Length: 165
Image (cartoon, rainbow, N blue to C red; front, top):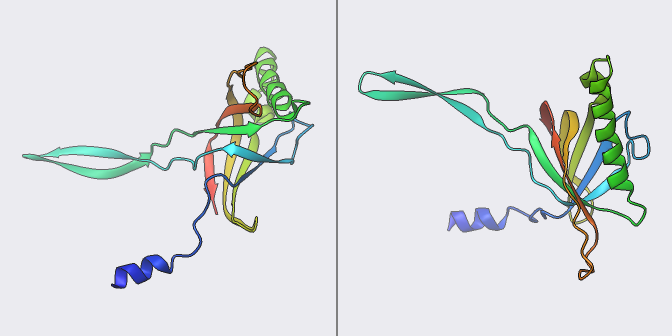
């Protein structure tokens, strides 16, 4: 019975749909520091590579370095003036232009993406900050005459490091 009591005292469950995303970058001046509600997201993966060392008749396993993918997909609802799509597209264009120039592009084009999981009362219950992030892939937007769904923009961000709070 102790197990049942422990489960019942865990509290309110977190809802997977309640994400707030803030993007900060010099290249998206229209939305710098503006918060969006994500339609869908996932927590960044946390993987440890395994080192296998053969020893006599068996293999010994040791934890290795970080093996995370360092990418995350975020989906947003967009407005009729396409603020999200235009801003992310502008950032991607700046990345391409930086590579064509002579400047060191990474220092100029990276930003910070902060994901906040919100509780039922919109209080922040978890924060994930993607350091040195940039939009790797702005996925195609499907337009369909037969649908009356809201326009969804999906972008894959690549990042160097994830700070969890």
